[in-house]
Amino acid sequence: MQVLCVSQHDSPPDAGLEVSAQVSVCVYGYRQSFASTPKGHHFRHVFPDDSSVLVVHSSAGALNASVGKADTNPSLARRSVSSLTSFPFANASHAYPIADATEMVVTWVTGHHISGKPCVEYGIDDLSMKAFGHSSRFADGGHEKRHIYVHRVVVKDLKPSQTYQYHCGSDDGWSAVYHFRAKTKGSHWSPRFAVFGDMGAANAQSVPRLEQDVRRGMYDAILHVGDIAYNLHSDNGKVGDAFMRLIEPIAAYVPYQVCPGNHEHKYNFSHYDHRFSMTDSRTGSLNNHFYSFNMGPAHFVSLSTEYYYYTDFGWDQIRRQYEWLVDDLRAANSPESRAERPWIITMAHKPLYCMTDDRSCSPIDSSDAFQRRRLRKGIKMQGSGKRKYGLEALFFKYGVDIQLYGHEHNYQRLFPVYDNHVLNGSTAHPYHNPKGPVVVITGSAGCDEHHAKFRKHVPDWSAFRSTDYGYTRMTVHNKTHVSLEQVSDDQKGKIIDRFVVVKDRHL
Image 1 (spheres, rainbow, N blue to C red):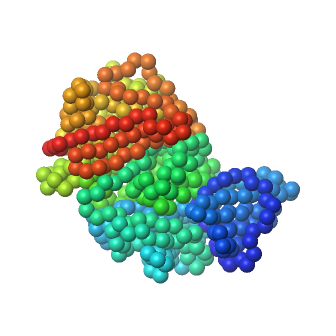
Image 2 (cartoon, rainbow, N blue to C red):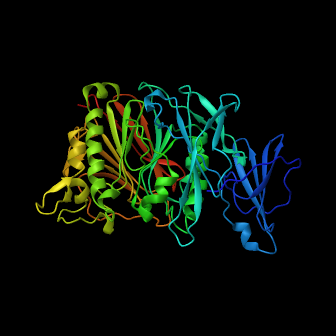
Image 3 (spheres, rainbow, N blue to C red):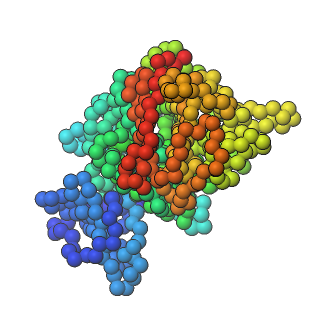
């Protein structure tokens, strides 16, 4: 997205502007003035042709935008203005392992080259500390061949659990001041998450409630399990810009962890690769497609199901990810690791089981219904006809406890299931020491493809279903208890499903 240079301005913004939108943005990309007031901050933005004015007022943490309509070009009054979005991620860079909780990656995008190195100024009580990073230019694959500039800065020497204020920019201008809390050290704490998939720039119904939750300090991280913006590449990347502006009031304050979905595949996932900064805790490398991280008593594994479907550039990525998964899960499942972090939780886009009434849940080269055989059993190898790189047996072998998915535009809670068999802990208490992984599908945050209906036949492994827009909250309380609940935005935040997974043993 594009960021706007900020300069001092002595007078408040013009009054009497007609309000056309209520948004949370920090404007960047054109020319703008800034003024402090006793009640907050005002940002006044004049479009390049001077035909429309945007005013953003900040007070008590809220940002409200007003657009003055211009007679010469009324359409500008509804124009989408680019902004700076920064992403403080919990996973660190090469210098320090993630367990140290001493680093944060801040990523932002501008529509033009900046002077000097990108910089983050930060501190506990002021902005006296500085960290510098690097910039890269990204060319969109659309017909306009738009260029954006991605800036990444690793903020180091953080004190675990400490809240820092920060802003990012360069000599060309600075963002508004945000804040983040450095990750808590160790495994003896209870991280809280919002989990959802399939949220677009249009019809993102869950965003206002998620933003409200973030302002209330309800989450330690966001898990967006694929299908982002609908689509990051659309309209020469401008839809991606709009989505990043949309989530800025969330992603600038808490880590926003992602995995790829099918809607990110355009131009070989290039927008997805450039706009996010996921770092693997074991290797320290940047890899948005498969990586792992630790939070509290849980080990999280993020992977790409899309490797199994988008093979225009070959099949080797399936093998590489699978071999990485084996190494990561083997290490996480060792007695030493399980003693420290007993929960293993995976996040990916396409679920291994689903019952949505559309082609996406139809069987793949199989007569078995309601499943994705390619993901579960693996891909057929030429010559032998045998399948390799299946995920279900791998997850079961290494004791994955909870699997989080999106893709289906609804909410589904499954009973513990493996190989189409229900493996409840007991009839009365299915999630107490379950004998198989617990699966949650949460793809109803809101997008322009709307709801997805269910098939009439309900399989044995289906426990709860809803087509309400909403998202999932998850808390890893301790080494034995994880709670999950589904928030219905259609029902004004009502909790429509709640359950607790209890495991007294994980090996």
